[in-house]
Structures are given as C-alpha cells and as structure tokens.
Length: 371
Image (tube, rainbow, N blue to C red; front, side, top):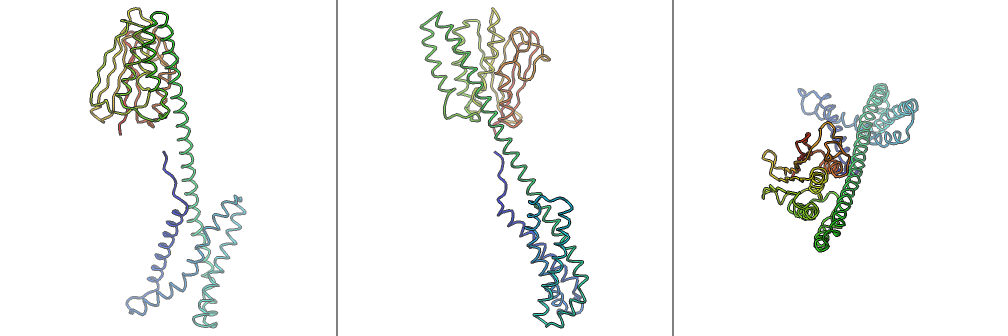
C-alpha cells in the first residue's frame, strides 16, 4: 500500500520552521555585518538593534507571500498577467516595508528622525524590497510546486495500486472457474464409469471447494505450502480416477518449506497444465514432478512443477501461452493468469520461468519471496 502524503498542517509546520530559521540566519548575518567587534560590546548591541529595526518588517510581510503565491497559482493566470501582478505586489511589499520601518522610527525617536531616515534609505529600501519579494516568491513557488508534484505522485501511486488490486482480483477470479470447469468435467466422465468412485470423488471435491471458495480469502492473501500441497493431492486423486496408471506423481518437498506462504492456487494451475497438455494426450501417460526447496542464496521458496511430456519449441511460447501436447503453443488461462498475478502481487520480486524444448518435457520454476 502506498505511503500517505504528509498532512497539510504538518507540511506548513515544517515550512514555517524553515522560514523562521532563514529569518534568524538573515538577522544574525545582518547584525554581524553591521558590527565592529574591535570597538567593544556597544558596537555589537548597535548591530543587533539595526538588524532588528531593519528586518522585522520584511520578515513579517514575508508570511503573507505564501498565501498570495498560492492564490495566484490557483487562479491559473497567464504569464503576462502573473508578471504584472507580481510587479505590483513587489512595489507594494517595498512600500509597506518602508512604511513599517518609518512608523517604528517615529514611535521610538520622533517624526524628524523618521523622516530623515526615510529620505536617506528610500531608494535602497525600494530596491531591497523588490529583491526580497522575488526571493520569497521563488522559494514559496518551489515549495508549492513540490507539494503538487508529491501529491500527484501519491495519487498516481494510489491509482496504480488500486488498478493492480483490481487486476489481481480479476486474475484470481479466472483461475477458480477454470479449475472448477475442468474438475467437473472429470467428475461427469467418472459417473459414467464408476458411480461409487464418483460419489467418493464428489465428497473429496466438496472439501476442495471449501478451499477454493473460502469467503475470507482475498486475491492477495496467502496460504501455507502445506495447505496448497494438500489441495493439489486431492486434485491429483480426482485426476487419477480418470487417468488411472497413466498418471505418475513424484513429490520432493523440503519439510522446512511446508510453513512458507504463497498465493492461493499457485501449484494447481501448473499441475493442471502438465496433465492437460503433457500427460492426458499420451497413450502411455507420463510423470509429473513437484518439488519445493529453500533457496540457499536468498531464503526464498523455490517451487518446480515438471512433466516428461513432449514439450514445445520455446520460441513458440507466447507471453501467456501454454504448451500443448503436440509441441505447439496454446493460449490458456492457467499459466498466463498465474504469471500476471505474480507480477502484480509481488511487485516484480517473484520469478516465474518456463523451461521447455521439443521432446524435453515442460518445466515451470517459481521463486516466491518470504520476507
């Protein structure tokens, strides 16, 4: 699940802390620039006084620049209109700076001193007012654009995650009916040959349905390898009733992996693919090997399902295609859905690889991360 973006209150809190820090740094540099330490402590106090008197107006006015910039961006004005408004705002910023400084000097030292100071500094204060306004606009514009970019990235990530979850649910929904359809066909065929065996098989099938149709299980939920193996054993028992001695199964399961987690219906589509296209079409049948082991390098779960059927030309296996018993490529649901589900469910961390060649069988290797 994607991380949520910072709340506006938190973002503003950090922004104003940074603004206060920059104001403090500017005040200290101004005070030091106006101080001659060699001439004693009084010069230091003079620098502090001058920095405070000169900088408190732009520091106070700077707080209003952020909502002003945000308002202009929300209006979506063109470049000429925005530049014109910023030019007027810069002049107003400089005028207010001088006005506040003038009122402060008048309050502290009287009208004559305030007027003399204004006449002496009016040009420089106007120039500095414009430059400070430009710097504030540039900084706050960058902050707001970064916020919008981050919000857009979060929204895109959330939309992508929602799409992935929807695709994952749809893919998992394809696997279940595919399995049910083929198993029901097996049971129908069995009822014509051996009704008693069909009755026993239906009881086994009912237990399998509880596994497949568990209402508490979602597309991205996990089951233990032991549960998946038990389910596949029941499925193979049903297929053995149909195929008889033509179906041979070889299990190679590392006991240490039986508690590992994997998506529901991971093994069954692979086994079903081997039966449908590697075992059932052959008169003599064949063998399916199912193995599970711990990957020594990264501690993941390594699964392999392999049959000794005719295989196919790897170049003829399209993405999402299954090999048929004649060595060609056949598009189907099992492998394609499983491949896509792994890509979505594990965000590229799982591995799904097919190995086959004409006359060399068909093997699927899976690697599922466990952390």
